[in-house]
Length: 333
Length: 258
Image: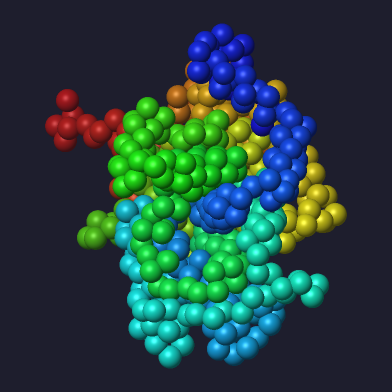
């Protein structure tokens, strides 16, 4: 959206950090600039494995995973305005479905993806449908409970999920005869998934469906009066958001070869949500920045040991006081 | 022929009868007003018609079919659009995005079309864009299409709401106090717009309004309600001289005749 209110001449005079932000925003308002920067980032991403250590690749792979998760949650929270505190559940369903189908039933990894996504949708509808009539705080509590239920089910269905110790020995997939067993392989896979997620989010956001999500977020009753079926629209946001997490879960299971319920704790849902809010809800670039910040910060400051999470918490608090809209927000907020 | 028939409509909140066996028709191609003192139940009637309230008894027939059990979005899809008494724009979105919401029920592309950006999807987006611009041009604020809706002056925000309702391609348009908060010039333009909507777009108009000057200027028929009951119905002059209407608005003279 070129030249929204606020980016006009009056604001161009702002100085200091705000001035820099205005100039940056004006730069990114141009579609060609956006594509150029995005292409440069992808290119840089493709070159990293030539120079980076395995440690670097591991961290970056993790941040790409987070980008996918954040973009998924962004559809639900950012576009449709539905606060979901149990999002990790769908990441879990994708990972567990893939793990069980490949290790217990001996399915090929690639063939396991469609049923894993189908399970994700089924679980999403089961725990999403009852919440469609709820608003804000009630919705948050129900999603929190539902998310925990999935983890507890995974913990207690020992025969299927391996209980508390989890699933081990998940098969490595192969691609064109190459067994994917190096971190660099997964680095490329998750980079591709993140790029795919960015493209998908961009196209969805600027479509009839994406607009409908935002109408419902801004004013449910007015949306309904304009002929929009709010229940169907919310459900579609839930499902599409969950699909991002489910797909990420499939590849996560293959990368780790072992998964346990502890990976999908309530804290995981919170971390994804924090990354979304930190980055700037409703903004794709914000999701990339938020996810990267969330994963990279604890690693960069590894030296200060356990203090780093304290510092991170403080930074989050300061951020929310002075810049509640996030690092790279949708400029309309 | 009546496009909208309301028969014995009754709505209760607890023990309170908000609408009491109300019956009236809106003729196709007409401009009909619903008036009444504050708290008479006018907006409740609108909310029943558009499916936001579920009436306790009676029937509402729109284009010869009962719409009593339909959800609001289904009623809009059948060709009845409304505006709100208090502005209900999508505030974080631009003017044109607001208006595009009206086209939602007239289009069908979903997630897959958006992801693949298929030929059909692009054609549909172009059509949505075209209709939205047409509606904005009709109400006269096309030049503001890329501004945020909440940053427009009040009068223009009202016009965004009208354009948005027009974009649903309605047969019947319900205006809930369209003149509220408008200045004299804006009211004159509203009267002109209401007539143009009927003449150029052949849309039937049903409105709630407090501004009697406006009501008397545009309406062909007026329905007057008080305490949820119809107390008068007819042409402007007829209603204005009806003693029951005068009583409802001005109060009754003392029995002693002071």
